[in-house]
Length: 454
Image 1 (cartoon, rainbow, N blue to C red):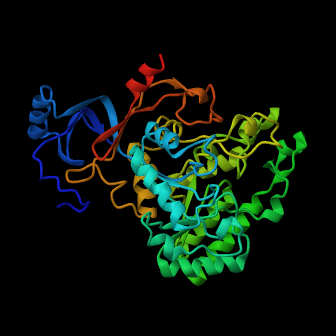
Image 2 (cartoon, rainbow, N blue to C red; image 1 turned 180 degrees about the horizontal axis):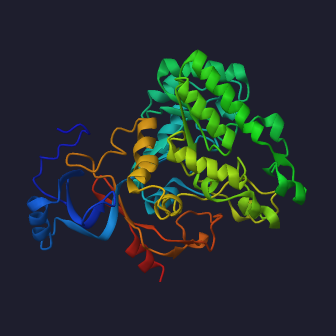
């Protein structure tokens, strides 16, 4: 029995052979064999022999990687799947399909559902539906406070001991603004050894805001969302974590000073981690000139200097991970003026391409960096022991194959999500996920997707 609870020797059958792939984009193309969801060989005579036999076997599936990059399956620790309550915008099934197309093998689903995921019954229903569809591991995130109301703490212990085994809690969409409540939450979380993820926004500073408080908002006459609204909560919660314990994760950082504060916090030994979204790495508030609701997000798109600082903070490890904050919305909530739009953007199917464009194609980093910030470190932060693992013999076959030279155009209507609110509509990218593999099962094959759309 291996460490992941799968007896890979009960059946001496190799059920998946992946040919012509380059692990981490390094070296010559090789062959990887998978048996009962576990990697059993990488290259060498054994893998070659199995690959040869596989061509004539009915028990073996062969995937030709066409020289693509093989990565550990991606892990997204910040998605909104909307179910239960807003199934007209997304469901666990459609969100799982979008995640698989984006190269993800595990996602963490935020608690701002209707009803809120603040009890074991809701959490277990989300978890079990994810298992039923089997496209990606869906792990529900519980709310920090009951009903996201910011007053009464959720029963972390009951949620953790449920079938869903909830180990991450967040009121994302709302900030736990009351300092005393956040202090109590950190103390309770420390005792239960669960992670708290904070949406950093002082609501008194952002009332009525719909854009970054800066030159663009001023010219357009839009009420601004100041950087200080985020940064003040970043600083407060790190100090609370320093004094009262617990593990703190900061969601979707968007400013230069937020990154600087996190760097300071880590230097002080504070147990803090942080994420950045693809849209805050790529897009700026210059896009708001036509008042389009598609570009409204919370926190808002900032200025170019913030984008550049966030990229550097991710490169140097100050910011730990990329998380999509995938937020589907119905057309009537986005195809309106920015003041009236709901905040949020699709992110699952474009995130890998954006990270590759910014860091790999530019020469700033390599594919091992992508594996670190989109798979290994996210899995480590949320303690998913069978995800984000090295590509090595004996490890789970949670894998992603990327074609690093596949040019494609982002189209919201062609994505798997029910919603189509992508800010990247018509944008050209040059890397694409071709296959996603969850414990040896192919959950996404780009050739089939493209074939079915013709």
